[in-house]
Length: 133
Image 1 (cartoon, rainbow, N blue to C red):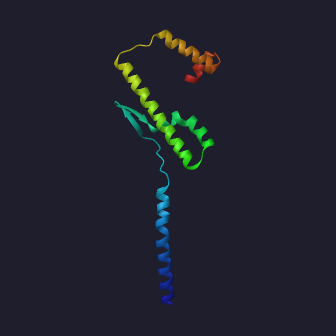
Image 2: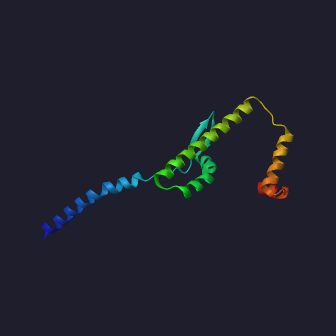
Image 3: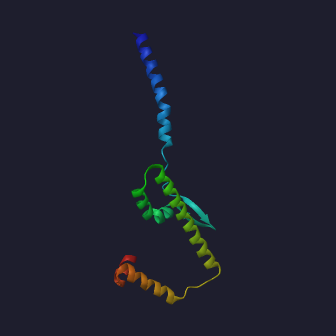
């Protein structure tokens, strides 16, 4: 009886020993997801992964409807790299603007604000203000 139990235990341990490494590799091979963190630092200004995702999100949705598998991953990587580059460029422009002490005339800010209200809120300033609150 002991002999049968020993053979069964040995067979069981061998089976578990053979199956565990592939299962562990599969679990660790799954793509890791970064919740948030630093994507780049531009002269002490931090750009986070969430900012990159926010910029790329609308286009990611479109890509997910057009591609699958490896091609989707390739397209998403290119999109996120382009979004990060865009954010870095924006930070550099803003930093250069501040360094040179440039000023935007108030009338240009007012004009642009009126354009946004007209295009995005149908000209309704109250809706615009409620959105800001």
